[in-house]
Length: 240
Image 1 (cartoon, rainbow, N blue to C red):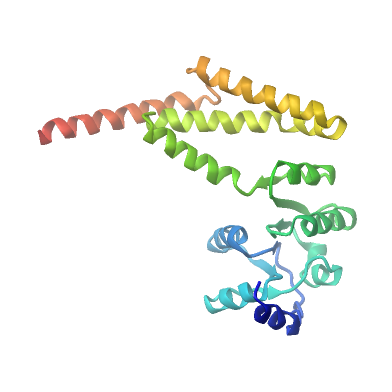
Image 2: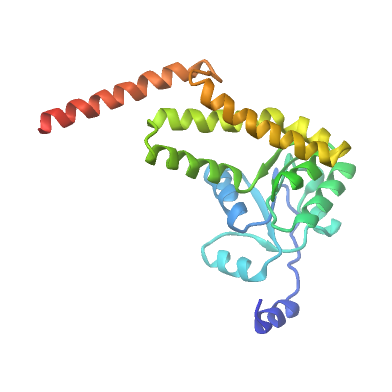
């Protein structure tokens, strides 16, 4: 951060968050939170948005977003935002420890509020689970999986085959998450060993179980992909 920007930020005071009754509080409106918030707002939900980056707040306000410049680690900010009556708190903030601090506070004082959290990595997700926040989303996981799917297609996989492989990968990660969490709590060396074993197991399964089905809908989508490929082939023949 430049010295000029740092001095400018230090001179700014946090907004006074007006008393809110919105059912959703979104803490963090950067690259990750902006996507979540836009989706919720586009579907008609009322969201109280708080971000602690003044430059970000200033820019987003020019685009018409209503958000507060504030620090959600301060209990009075959450109180003013209506945490006592909120249905959902979304922690999309980038700060690793601050997100955990807010989750711990809300879990202790407002256990009825559902918390969904952005996790920097699997270890961050484990820390949330320790606080009984199980609805976590690793920030790079889905985007990395999507790019991996495209890579498989580029390397010769049929579109459905690539999609199915990625879905199996995600299913596998979700299935082993809690088991790895238990190892992480009890024995870090065992955690490393099991992580390696699960990775090898995944590779072997993907190689051997080409027809593995995670869901009954697999075959239906496969038929559709075959139809699309057939139509594409017919179109090419006619053009020739």
